Length: 82
Image (cartoon, rainbow, N blue to C red; front, top):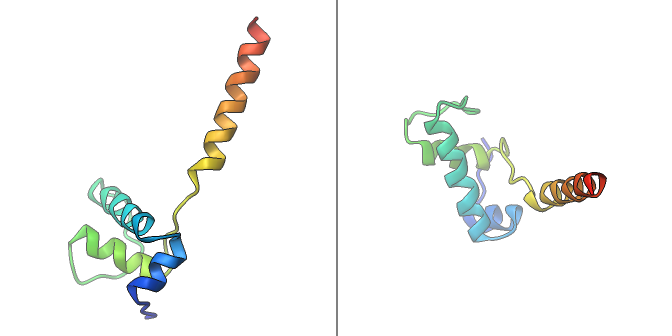
């Protein structure tokens, strides 16, 4: 298993706040019964999500690109109705 220090993980995802967001978001998914992507000897969803990140099984998705597409489609729909 490849272990990285916390600073490397923070740089990998773009900062410590993004690192925290990623781990907590993934932990919430695991709590909602999302499949676990690593073999873990714990039931703690935060530890499991941290292990998944350390093994590069999860990544932070950039929301900005998706939000731009939604805004463009709304503008197009509004222009067609006017």
